[in-house]
Length: 234
Image 1 (cartoon, rainbow, N blue to C red):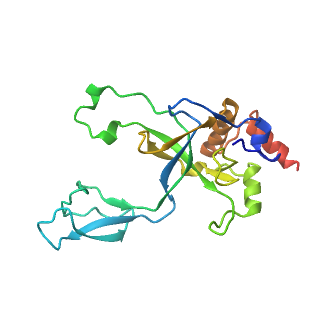
Image 2: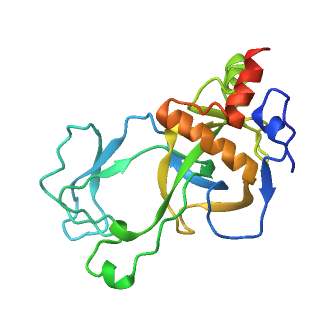
Image 3: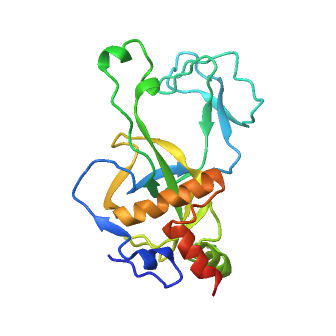
């Protein structure tokens, strides 16, 4: 499926935005799908309260409590098979949804096995940075985004939002949230890798956009700055 782009989008200016590839590797600009948490929600913590049967180590009563930055980790630990607990840690509960995401980093260098000895896996397992897409369409099941807001995003008025029409179908318009960039383990269990990636020209524009968001400054000689200038005359 090849998306069509309106003339007030940077995709239309660049020409081909997405390309299909047979390469299975993760790379900058790859389109993936993954269960990603809602960033602005109030997370909760799962706290084991006790057992109705002291001998049933696979069952326990749990309580869900609000988690705040000043919440101390529980002092007492109740061992439950399948949900081990560790000092200083909590079990967080968050809403998450499987959604498209754009890979915005390489995986980093592989760590030699001899350097991993004795380390917890999370200290050396590689990850990538991804930014999620949110469907902008309105329907009976989806509130969507206001039409004027989507139009202004499409015209690149905000550094944290980028408009797109993804090649995977589902919705006709999507919004990339660069202020929701988050790490994701690179294992096959963590994500579904689609056969699509940004073209070289599109990757340059996205990198300009990222720099604009990170620093608040937009290079005057880049494609994105030129596009914004053209849109300002409309």
